[in-house]
Length: 478
Image 1 (cartoon, rainbow, N blue to C red):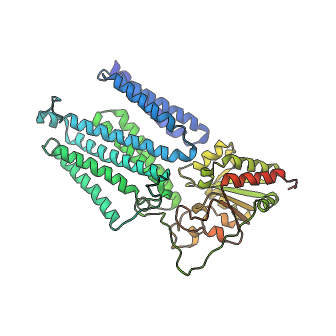
Image 2 (image 1 turned 45 degrees about the horizontal axis):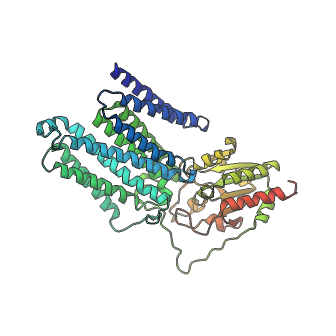
């Protein structure tokens, strides 16, 4: 009876996971998707817990309590920190998979466990199960250290550089480590209970752990959202392997959903940047490009807040292009105030959303939704670009590479071919930027030096707030 209840619960939990992913496709049903995912996970845990072979309940209660102690504070991070918090979640998942695989292997080889009999160990550690264990520990430990490194880069930890770190034969060395780990894993599949097998097992785990670190070092901060999606896929695949090791069908299906959704998201993001997985993982994208000696010195044209407010007030159409700078400054509510001031004057206001603006997919959508800006005024890149030549003012708030015209015409640029929002085709451009430093791609933005662009340097929240004050205090009529 209990077995039947457990299996039915697993089927319901799987269905809830599927619906959760489906409802996440639309902002209107996203909350329902979160609720469905939570319900599915609670059901899965309870169904597993009630099985007769589960005996050490105090350990389980302690683990759940520890999870709450860590998880609740992590759930309260600001929206700008969600990508690194997500990376930490992947790290925990990868570590769990790696440790379960390690425990499952050594359980059958540990002295005093009653399984010293090599024949008994071989009977359990079949080639299929050993293949799953090897895949589980490699994927699990790669995900663990890779996700920790990604979180550190996004959090701007001092001893982890955001820019790519490269050295001679880097990719060759990294691939050699992964190939060696896989080769030793194959050896374990055929000789799981040999006297030297435990040492080889630990070497495989160590190599996977090292590879996770070395994989992320040459990747810049701009590519971290894509890398996190790829690591999410790895975590899902390690869960699939764990499901085969533990003979748990729910782990297999849930891991497959996790792995496939992470892979699909990574593909979508790579297409949005017009780049391949290989370029993201091995291209060292984001190294600062130094200007050639004796080259032409470019100058910015700056504008005062008062002057920008006057031009905005005279506009008929304004397109706001948000980026990571808006997220860092937490300026979304001031942007909403600006939106309200412009709408009061009968000015048409739209928000142009680039698919990889910010540090996670949908980052700008979530921020603007938090400020209660109507979804109907959020326009995707492909749709807004056709309108840009008729736009009076393009207001770029903290965006950089996603509006750089070099992507269209400069074949030597690292972002050449990347789809961008055509801000440069608006009649007037105001760009709010914290400093003169280049964006994540490590290059200057041609948009900032064109004749129709004016810079407003400063914190996005403060600058937009000053624009709102100017518009609110002015008595001019549109």
